[in-house]
Length: 220
Image (cartoon, rainbow, N blue to C red; front, side, top):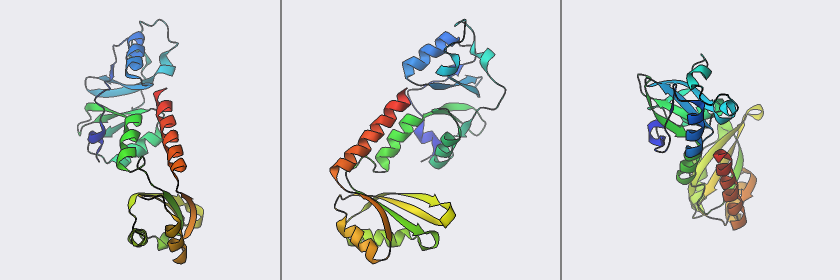
């Protein structure tokens, strides 16, 4: 789950001496809206289709469009969570990966990252979802897992969402079953606040539809 594990084998960087026309053609060919510009193995900047589409003449070199601000990058040994945090802070849909000496080693695509995360987090697996509102001090994944397994179910993935003003968290559970009635009853019997549940095939189909819409959005 390190940054190097998510490097795309389909994306290559632009070079500072590439023309605007070449950059547009490469981004169109690779179906991305952003690409990093690399010079002598160093990440210089990012360019987007929107920024260079109207640049004239198209023979103009990218080096003349590069800003002096440091370009975002992630070190190949950093954890996946740091990659996600960086994507949340930058407008680009790709991020450059560098080694310990700050030399370019590859590109991570947000679209490919989401697709991989969806598979290993169980997002696309059939099953229901429960959301619990729990006080931070009362949160125990071991206890939650015990109650789930008591009902002959398994947790496929867990996502936490902080509710800062109340010092509480939302715990979203993806489960391997769509029959959630007994689970809801069990949690409520143990004084857990169940705030939402999604249990039928239509709900899962809707989640997949939203996932596919997100993928199509990232293609633009």
